[in-house]
Length: 185
Image (cartoon, rainbow, N blue to C red; front, side, top):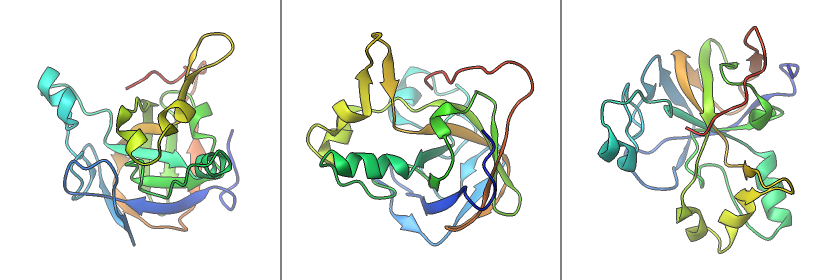
């Protein structure tokens, strides 16, 4: 899917310099190639997530920038869970992009030159229930075929840096070749 620039855009941006679950929204964030969001606790060339650092601190950081589609918040509101931008720890909240349907290696050109490459699906933790009791069951569940469905957004690495602000357009650039489903990262 390649939406028109007018339909796909940034709703909100967030960052936090500490390893807290939610991130405060900001007027803008700066993406740095190969590193992530300037001033964010999860930025770095190697893993920064606390539990992953314990396992192997030299692993490459495939989770530099976390993106969530705002349409998820509307769905959760219908199910009785109030979720706002930044509450699930994402750096960029989008609208008009089927993030979960993108293949591995898809790139998002955001604003005037920032580019992120999608590495996989976010695997959330039970801290999500701290936002709203039962929210985790809404966001991660087994479908009718017994497959795990994860709705908590996608992870990416920064290919080209730049400033990202709410209202910036997003252009999807699909990789050549066969569609490779997103792994959990």
